[in-house]
Amino acid sequence: MDSSNFTLFERLISKEKWSRNDIEVMCRNLGLMVDGALENINDWSYDRVDATVVEDGGDEVYVDQEIVEELEG
Image 1 (cartoon, helix red, strand yellow):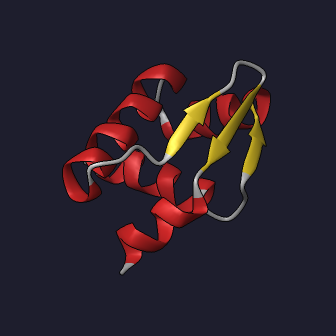
Image 2 (cartoon, rainbow, N blue to C red):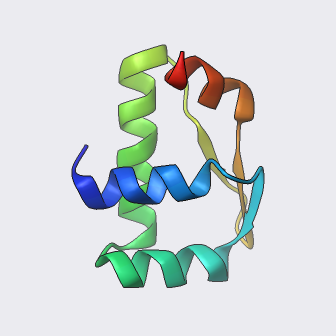
């Protein structure tokens, strides 16, 4: 995962739920596209712990804190 995607991941894990709008702003500031960035983060997570860490619920994006703990452990 490149540094921009990792920076987004580090920001996302600070909360369990984000509005899509907040993530769009973060991605814009990092030069990322939302869908591609979330996919990259989930691919990275799946490669490390065999599970995805973010779930795009449309207007809201959820961060699985149990998976975050696995990734950090």
